[in-house]
Every structure is written in structure tokens, then in C-alpha cells.
Image (cartoon, rainbow, N blue to C red):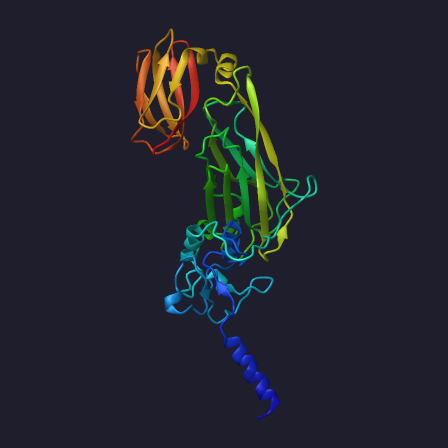
Length: 368
């Protein structure tokens, strides 16, 4: 038997041999932890197919599974696409997304660092928060836009980003939300269903993990702008008895920005210091009506009470975040109850009309 034939036979057997590594469902980049960076790896391999694992190993349960025969494609760095097939059925699809969700935060073996996008202020495009309020008040919701890049520092070849938003859980209520935009520059060259979006919240730690990835293999056109919105509620009594305001920080951390070649791009992760004002102080300085109105409880569950002092409530309109009026009334009395048990939990604006003027108050509905 000739040496060339033996070499060819050895190479063929090598290519057909199963991978020696073990696959932990959800840890697509095989660095020892399931997190938002695995969403970015999933987005890069999404839609591809290859050899399946043995039927009894086709599971997303958190355990090591013998890898199948190697797939034809690898991630940059040499990791085989088989690691993105979390459930082992031979197809990289939304079932593998659920494996990440199910096993999020699980670890195994020795952890290695994710790719980093650490950039310097002024030289790298920023990721930053923009508050949508001129004043932040005790007991009220706070809204922030999350912006990536600027017109002068655009993001080139955007394909996916992962990051965390951190905050002081002693200042803010535990239930924080992140809302994704439905269009914008990150959707360029794609259909709406070709964007993968993921959020995992850790309220007791004061952290939300976020990931956004394209799925079609094509980068977005160079651009910048809003990529989502952050919603959170301020605790009722965070300002001290002898203070009118208190400062606290919200930070963007653990940023990983990848292009369509899975190259980590530098990003400057900004933080924001906000001032929260005492509810009585802000009401007395911005709208005198605030001194004569009580809205409680806020947040509410079953009902929201509005009490007026020295005048009657003429009109009440409760508006959801889409601008739709979900409740309207003409009380013609000094106190009124709005039933809220039937309304979805979330953030609302209460528009109050009185004989002395109008006032708008942010409220939140929570359900157990």
C-alpha cells in the first residue's frame, strides 16, 4: 500500500472522527460559562446544519455531552460549529437559543475570559445612557435610551453586542426592564425576524444582561443611534430626611461588540450619575398642584388611589407606554380609585385634570 494512499486514508478517518471535546448545552464558545456572549456566537452560526449527536445525547440538560463528528465550519479561532448545536439535533436554530436561556449562568470547569471591547473615551465609539426626564423623583419610573455610537463615531460592520446594565438595588426597585427597538440602523440589510434579542435580569444584584445579534451573516450598514430602552422604578424613600436629593450611578459594563467576522471592536462603556429628588421638593417647585395631590400606592397592584386637597378631580386618563389611553374617568370629586388588576404590569402616565390646572404623574402597575 502506497504512502500517499495511507496519508489520504488517515486524513479521511481524521475528518470523520468525532470531536474529542465535551459539549455543555448553552456554552457555545466553550469558555466555561453560559452568558450573553453565547448569544453572539449563536447569531454567527444560526441556520447552519451538520452531524447530530447520538439520539440519547440530544438534550439541553446541563451535563457534558460527547461531541458528534466535526461540522464543516469553525468559528474564528478554530472552535467547531457543533458547539452551537446545543440540543444536538444537527440544526442551529431557536431551540439552541432556549438552551442558553435554560442554562444561563451555569458554569463548568475552568472559566476563560470572553473577548473584550474595552475602548478609550474619545477614541472609541461610546455605549451610553440618555435619561428621558428632566427630573427623577422618588417613587416614580425612570426611562433611559441606550445609545451605541454617535454621528461622529459610527459603528462599522455591526453584527452583535452584549453588555450589562448595573445599578444600586437599594435605590431602585428590583423589577427593571429592557425594551428593544423594532427598527433602526442595526436592522439594515435584514428582515425583522433576523435579529436575535435577549435579556436576563438579576434584580437582587442590580444587573441586567443584554444581547443583540443579527442572524443573516451580513453586517449592518455603518451607523449609530438607539438600540433599546431601560426602564426602572425609584424606591419611595431614598432621599434622606435632611436632604432634598441624592445621587446614584447606572453603569454599562461587560461590553462585547462583534462584527460579522466575529472580531471584537473597541467600545467606550459609559456610566451615568443621576440625581433623584425628594418627591415633596420636586412637586412644590415644578408644579404647585403636586402639593395638593396624593397618588398611592405607586407601584400599585389592584387599584390606584388619587386624593386631591382643596379642589375636585375633573378628568383622569391613564396612558400606557404606546400612548394608548387604557382608562378614562370624570370623577367630579376629590378622591377616586382606578382599578388596575386587569391591566398588564408596566409603566403608565396618569394625566390629571383639575379646576386648578393639569398634572402628569408616572405610575407603575405590578402584579405578584
